[in-house]
Image 1: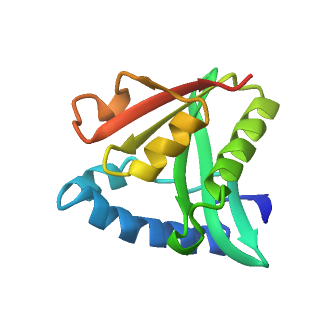
Image 2: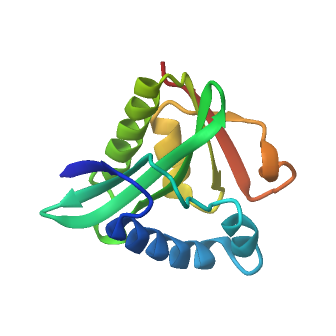
Length: 150
């Protein structure tokens, strides 16, 4: 597996998040996907990674600044056919390293309770559950996390 740092203009990243959006539309259920979608925009993002296996894009993620000390992880996705191979762990770790290199000390993120694999990934990666923040306050399907990365 190879992980490449890139931008939101990357065609492989765009393809993967299109697949992610289709998946989330089913998992989140009617109405909720539209709510979450407006908080998942990543245009003009220069902190994107894409994971490849034999030159085939199989996963992605990115981060954006949340506050002066923290990044928010966004658009984490691994194709169904390659899940269980620690690709999500590798993507998340690369994003954390990159954010720390830039000077951030914390990572926050939100995922849906119905995304059981994602919740498991974040807990196994050392993220602690926190109160829902920002647009996720009061959203019962959301679970938010925090991790010190530096």
